[in-house]
Each structure stands twice: as structure tokens, then as C-alpha cells.
Image (tube, rainbow, N blue to C red):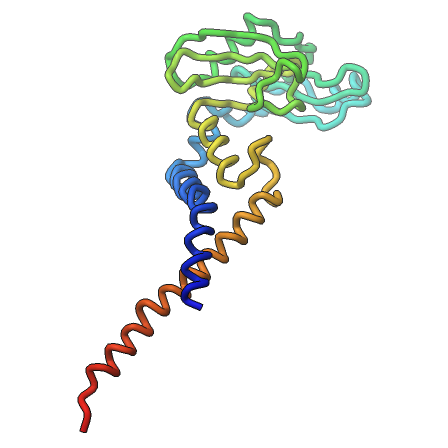
Length: 240
């Protein structure tokens, strides 16, 4: 038994030991970072609550003008109330809640203005580009947000805002701490593709081998410590 446990514990740990190290390092990073910081919540100002006194265009008037409006949301944008909703023919639509005017799609200059308005730091913008299709899309962005403006700021963490071309909303925020967190997560769950499959077979196999290595180590511990102590106790017991 002891020979079997020593042999298999050694070889199993050779195979899974590096992944154990990865689990430790990645887990340490993920638990030590504030998840709200990772999500970029500190990068952007929060819109204040909508002052209903400033809403001069009623929801009834909106529905009369856009009878197929769906998912209507009254929110704040650049300090003024707006309606955001979807329609069958126009897609995502934004209407000024003070006067009922349909807002145009966001151009490059507007994307820069929106990013600077919501960004909490004084850093300058270094790059702005429009992303229209999946082939040009970075892995950190979901396809459901297309088309979006990617606005990058001058900082070592590379803060990046993604702004919807249709609505002007900041759909997501990214920085290098989030990007590192994303890679840490992929190594942690052993899904090196998109980091979404937490039940992949590779993780299952290594986890099972890790359990076997731990059991073999427990057998070694029992024989080397507990049984050894019993033998010493027997040897040291004085005879009558």
C-alpha cells in the first residue's frame, strides 16, 4: 500500500502540480481584487435620477408617435432625460424626453464627448474607432452591443469605453485589470477559448487526478506520521 501510494502520488503531482500552482495564483488574484473595480464602475460617473419635472414629453405621446415601441426606458443621458426603446423598423431609438425630438446616431465627435463626460479621470483620449462587425470586435466585447464606438484613454491601464452608436449609452467599460482578470479566470477554469465553459472535460479530468493525488498523499501521511508514532509508542513502552 505504501509503495503504491508513494509511486502514484509522485507521478500524479508531476502532472497536476503546475495546474495547482495556476489555481493558487489565479485564485489569489481574483479574490484579492474588488469586483466592482474589475467591472470598471470607478471609471464612469453614474447618472443621477431623472427629474420628472424636466420630462415634458409624456409616455403617452411617445407611444402615439411610436406605436410599436418596446422595452421603453426613461433614463438620464448627458444630464438630460431621454427615452430609450426599440422599434421594429428603426431598431434602437433615443428620444429627448424634454421635447420629443428623435436623437441622431452617435458620430465620432459625439462619442468622444460622451466618453469625456462620463469618464471620472482627466486622462486624454488616444484613440476612437467604430466597430461594426464581429470580425473587428475585440474578445472583451459582446456582439450584442454592435455597432459601438471604442474610445481609449491615455493611461497604463488602458481604460476603454464602448459607446453604442445607436443610443449613445456606455454599454461596457474595460481596463487592463479586467483583461488580466479575464485571463486569470480562463486559466482557473481551464477553458482557454472564451472562458465561459466552467464544466469542460479538461477541468474535470485534472480535478479528479488532483483528488487521487490528495488521497495518495493522505495515505502517505497516515503511514509516515500516525503509524510511525504508534510504533515508537510500542517500542518505548517499558516491560513489566
